[in-house]
Image (cartoon, rainbow, N blue to C red; front, top):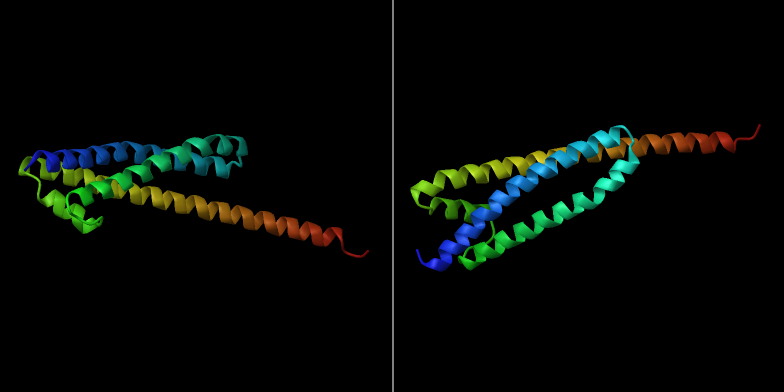
Length: 144
């Protein structure tokens, strides 16, 4: 393997490791967000919005970088390409990288599920608030 493909693969694996750490942070942030939503703590929700957005931007930038790295290896950006890349690694690296990739996919899925849970909670809260406000406005403007 020439130096360029080896350095590209090394960068790809480093991105996976960085994403593992950052997706763990994101998952924790999403849990805290859910807790703050349940307790209607708008100050804490507002305070955590900046770090949340920064973390998401970093994760997106890294995903874009991995896509670019796959392109440098003449591969398209797809799950199949990642599987082929991992399969092509020497035996000593294949299993650890595959394990980390699977762990990352599971963590991304967990973050998506928590985000969906947070979204459902927000929708329920908005619906309840809308019903309360609508009932108050109807009662306020009813003729005596």
